Length: 464
Image (cartoon, rainbow, N blue to C red; front, side):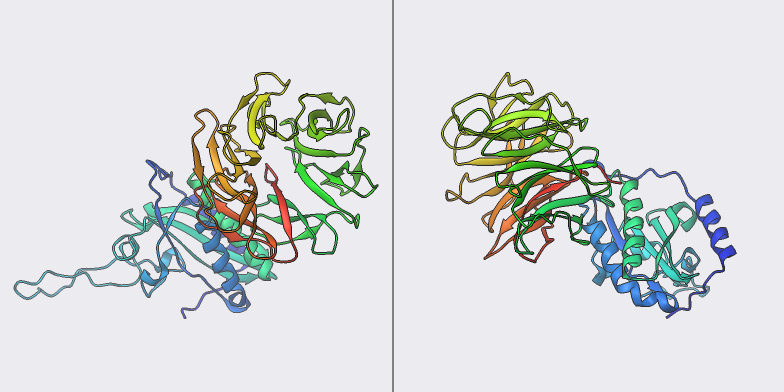
């Protein structure tokens, strides 16, 4: 392996200045629905950094692949000589001797070159490469992204940056995710770095609220009521989580601060069921459903402390799961049994202008708005046996639907990621219910949980 020199602290500062100075204007991007091809060279580390490179390389690859913005150039097609830094690129030279008659002169390779990656069999447009080194107890990543269709390294550089993390597997993941986030940003993608998925798990013997990072790591128990706690929803500003718990006997709404972990005040109405479903986009009010005032669950709204309850729906049928449009804050989708089987409806936040969205076939439940406020994901039994569900997407304006899952397990509770490209959902495949993510076209399905049963996910709308 080629030796990597570990720079001094002064060298790191100088390198950072050099990297910043070399940034060209970027004109790339995804256009016409075509995904650019990217190659991600396996990187190496100097000294103690090498032990973390397996974690680093797999994390970087997965972050880029699962973003759904690129066509991944297969590693089996890569050249044998992988660049680690810009100085490794050496332009080929033409032979000094004249070729034999009928032969075409072939350039002499002097080292890695851009066309090694842009030409077949790799046929990539972009190349991510670099190396890591230990420095003052930290793991330092020198990361570059090149547009390999450009004529020379000076014009090819899109990203050249230093990243810092602890000397550990977690540090390797950190710098890989940060590098991936910068790559995605160049193409208009939004990194999920810092976002959280909240969900219900019974792995402790009780249903409690848990959280995890967007990729399934750092699974952490948030509630400890040793009862049933379920139906979580998170405020748009990511400061509060509301859920229903049977901790006091009857199902009541509790609200916790996500900043301190403490329980906040919420005044429940006397009822056999109180369940939160969503927060308004300004995070000042809660959308909920309750049996307060009748035997059928109906839709209400209240302040985040439980004051000023206002009834929105009033029919002799169950009406649940209200979700407010995150863009307008003026309309919501919900589930109603007013026509028999549960179907999806839309109405204004004051209860006016009610319109059915689904066609009445099967059971349609669990609506969730896309961040753009134009599409919803939901679970539907259409074309499937009663009681089992698949995940669908609907364009609310046209009512056009697309099916994402196809008969593999019972798939429910889809929720959009903040990037609008990913969906988290629960799926029962066998004896347990687990959480999965996928792209919005149904591809790149990835299991996030394994312990116990895990359900009812909700994805924080904004990243930290």
